[in-house]
Image (cartoon, rainbow, N blue to C red; front, side, top):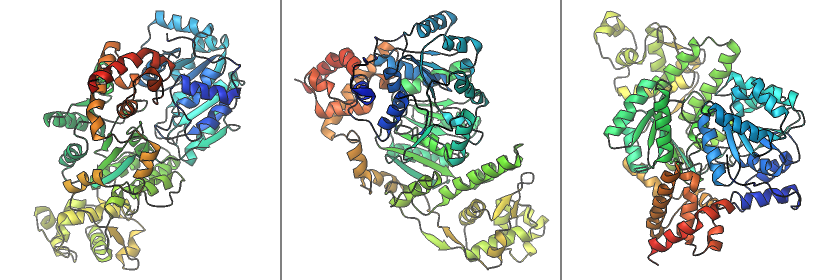
Length: 629
């Protein structure tokens, strides 16, 4: 059930001193990041906390280090088996005594784990919320010494969170049953309303709230208008990520299957993942994604939460997510190691229509629909914004970025705006004069003066707007209608799918209110995609300074690949993901610094005492061999 005792003696120099000693000796890091030190000191002292920290920002250390400093076992409530399994294996590699209780653990092993908990022979226990609230589990905790409760993915407790799970509501019993045990609720994504709901549902009114920057400066954000989206995706992958691991999100299961098969036919190692696949297939595909290099997982949102793979180099969306919270959470799975990554999304009018229809047809309460409608409008605003995407995204979470980031598509290729007042009047008039019951295809035929069978049947060749927009292409009119829907000037009837005018449309249609819109680019060119890698936008220098492993010299690249091969062989022998042994960032640093002895190896980031003992000699030997020494 894990390695040797890792807890430090109480004679260490205070709580902060003990925490820093664990950070270096167990995890192999030299300094805390951001507010980690304050959070850890607060929890070690017995305080409750709500922590909002972006994916890859180091949330896990905020409860793992207190677990090793405080007496007793730390109970980590986690929603996914994959997360438990990976984190337990990673901790065991560090010499930490960790285990998990979930449906994959047979009764004999479960009994052994329960005995270890009661005997104080474990440092961390991962458990699903459904299991935690059983009488057997609570009885176990009653007779055990508990260090703390860590409630991961805490947004799941909120009805306003993007991944609400009713079983999380029962976690309020922890405070009632174990009032002296500190609780730490953690999430990467929660707006102000969701935060307030987490605090209320979990009884954390007296907890300190730690909110770090939501900024992920290593991620390049890019949104493109759909124009043969599969080919656009393939161009993006070939130009930016020819051999990298990544995730492609689709809305439907059928689209996941079709896209994965198509990418495989284009020579990419692509696998599907969705709830409709057999459980054994999902597990096999996830394991291959975690353990192999360069696998692309095509998935619905059923895949991703709790995936601890640090070297995901891109997240692509072929359909709109449900909200900016969901988008932020999903894109945050890229670049967890802090090195450059991409968030790429293609979207079009059909996405907007489908999401609005799903929302209107939802059986949810009016209050919930109102909140979800506001979230959808914020997402569409992000897609259509002409300003810096990072400023828009951070602004949604209440954070201000003083200057444009220089590392998103609207910064790298500034958006052109145009006065769309007159074309918008034409488009809105076409909706009104055809009876507000037709979709984009028919309306565009009317505007362009195309007298097809349907136009003639309804007599729409005789209305004033017939042919007034003949000078504009179908694509231009599609882009105009997409933006009118996104701006809330046009709604879509959930039954007829016809376009209708909203109250906000009338001042524009009557010429009382001017309207400026984004000018859609023809298509993202290969030059633009490739050129981003050579550019040094404002902010990238800061990224490199903050993450010294972000770049690797060409001379070290071959050595780095050789070290990856050594790591891959070790991972295969142990049956664990490669990153559990060492992250890519550690191997990059190893290739750059080329240590020649154990002392030099111990200075590498991510090399704690356990990994020094397990791997120093074999990697030092590999370095000598690869360098020809």
